[in-house]
Length: 304
Image (cartoon, rainbow, N blue to C red):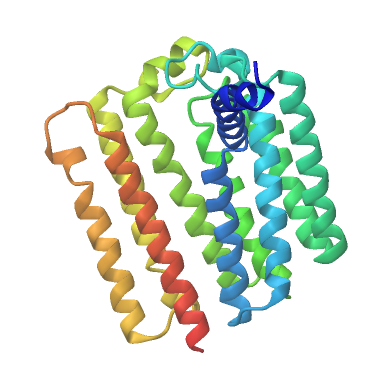
């Protein structure tokens, strides 16, 4: 057979294998979550500096790499539990598309490189916070999930750290009330994301060996709890004007408007029938809200 034809005939299989490998790698790194985390770092930097700069890329890229490494390590840590849940059994490790050893190696390389970037090209506080976030996520939160159904509350500290890294990378003070308010918003907002998952997958979490609020609350109670935390997220955003983070009348008005829209979009949790919630639209509402809030913060900062 002609070698050119042989190569041409096998190329679709090669292309398919490459596509599967790339998809598995992106899944291992939880690329969408890692990008979201780095965007909060971007926001923290801009809110303090009020300007774009090439230095901005350092903490943003470093946090993205760190988040990717922490995600890969989380896949490695929970591979046996993931194999027990329909929602996660197709992840790279349970499905066998990536070996545990490879995942562990990738995570180590990402965590080391992300940490070094912060240490060498940002500042010591950024490095310490970045490393602490990884240690808290993989060393504390990951194990707390098997001990207490309320693990997400202390675990959400991880979501509060990236914007602070951006802030101090821009030479901001770590104990500035403004950045603490910013961190508090991102801390609160992590919690309803997980409550939404439990509304649909709570029993799967129990079966896999995780502690779940479905052990304590019925569906109606869990829906009300989720609505409370969604509302708390929206209300927390309204403290930004009190700390001088947002001061323009137009931006304050938009902030109030999008926060009210978020609350109204979740009213079905407490007013509707006690039926299975559609997770994807609910997640989309929360994620779009977060994106809009960060956009408001960035525009406000650049206008000054």
